[in-house]
Image 1 (cartoon, helix red, strand yellow):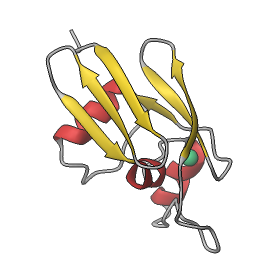
Image 2 (cartoon, rainbow, N blue to C red; image 1 turned 90 degrees about the vertical axis):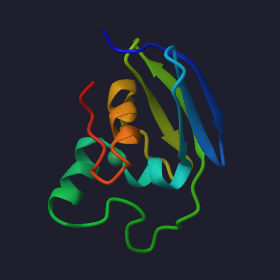
Image 3 (cartoon, rainbow, N blue to C red; image 1 turned 30 degrees about the horizontal axis):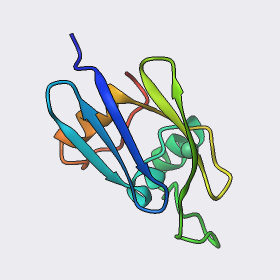
Length: 109
Ligand SMILES: [Zn+2]
């Protein structure tokens, strides 16, 4: 069984920290989370070898405007630049964290 999320702490301009019930705490900076947005649009850009964020002319200053649980399996984040289509699955965030965040984040739980 996948470890369950027991706490999510969001510091809008800085980070999101996710605590799992086995004690693992994964802390992601807002910029790396925004850049790794797993939505279909951002994935498409990455698949074409482009950077999903910041796009040309976009500010690289970002913050979390709002975050909402997406059922029991993740959260959707609304960003200060208006982007809000990414759903960040807990299991995917955990795998990403444990893999050293070298590979793109996926949306699969
Ligand atoms: Zn996206």
